[in-house]
Structure formats: structure tokens, C-alpha cells
Image 1 (cartoon, rainbow, N blue to C red):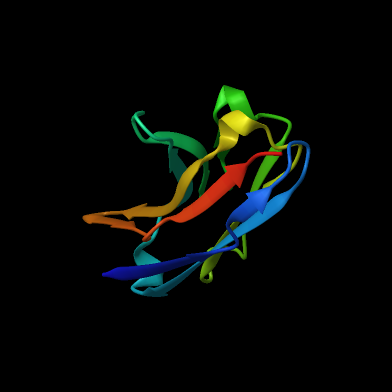
Image 2: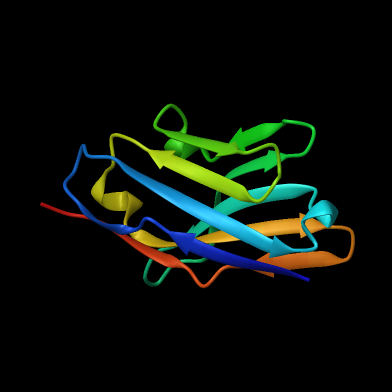
Length: 115
């Protein structure tokens, strides 16, 4: 099992930046992919960005060029740097890890983009 703890959410004005961090503990060596998802009110949870142990990275079209996902070589953290934030980025952001027979979610952190 892997436990995840997120931090870094908050309120920011449009155009601002936030950095989310997720720290994993437990069976970290089993993790193959680390990702960030988000869920806005009344909407389904969606993938924001994912990084694999092979350094493959993918982003949702809506965040390309604004968000950057990074990991400390899968030692225990995955971060999401969010720049040029828009009101439509407002959501609860969840950290996720996947591996053989493994799926874990963090508790979520609120990001609100508003003036």
C-alpha cells in the first residue's frame, strides 16, 4: 500500500501561480506512474498530468504550456507547478499513483482561482 499526502492548494488570482506537492510513503518501489487529477463541482474527475517511471509525461490539453509535473525520480514526491491560472482551473486536485495491483489516491487539496 501507498499513502499520499497533498499540500499547496489555496486561493489565487487569475494569472497567478501555485505549486502542489504530493508525498508518498509505503511501497514506493511498486509505483509505475504518478499523476494529478482534478474535479470541479458538478464535473467528473479528470486527468491533469501524469509522469511514468520511464519519464513519459502527458498533460491535459487545457493545461499544456501552463502546468508542469515533476518527480524526485520516484523517490517519494510528485509536484505540479501551475502557472497562468484561470478561473476554470478551480477544482479539488488529487494525487494518484499506480503500479501492478496498486492504486492510491490522496485526500485532495482545493485550488480556487478568483479575483
